[in-house]
Length: 174
Image (cartoon, rainbow, N blue to C red; front, side, top):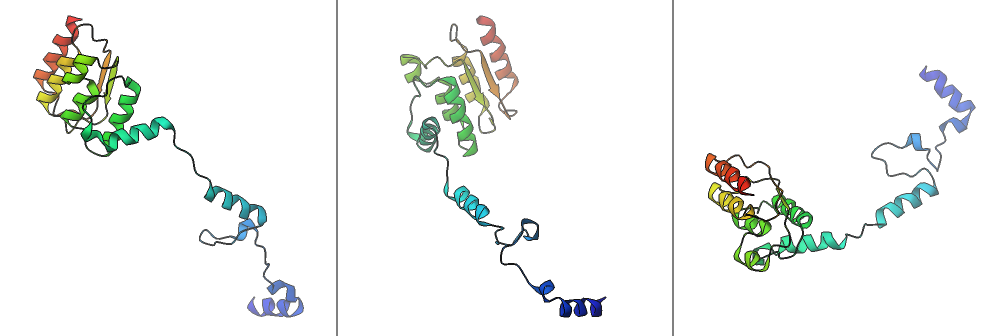
């Protein structure tokens, strides 16, 4: 086998030539070679383009970065509050005070109105305490508040029998 291959290469020198332009199948996963000029342009274009973030995502990022300075969310709607809630969970700073601000249960929101919060999603309530959750439920589900749903994820420690009783009492008054 090896002797015949050497003999064939001696007879046909083009068998040992390597192409300057590689074919796509010949490129290894770690090889940086390009198959042609079109692939080179495509790779350059994909590496230089970037998506411009939406205005709402920039606002949510700003609010989350400065959430310790916020007293009230005022007229922010439920959808934006849920985005803020998810971002706060990602940073692991969603606690009783943050949920109270999101739920519109602090004094500022009670005086000025909470902007029509109809639902609240707390994707990870593991940092929320039972007394804090009970106070939030009591305030959110006051008569004629317009709240339809509160979604609690991973809130097993905070969801005690007292909180469950408060949920039943608060929702039965409406």
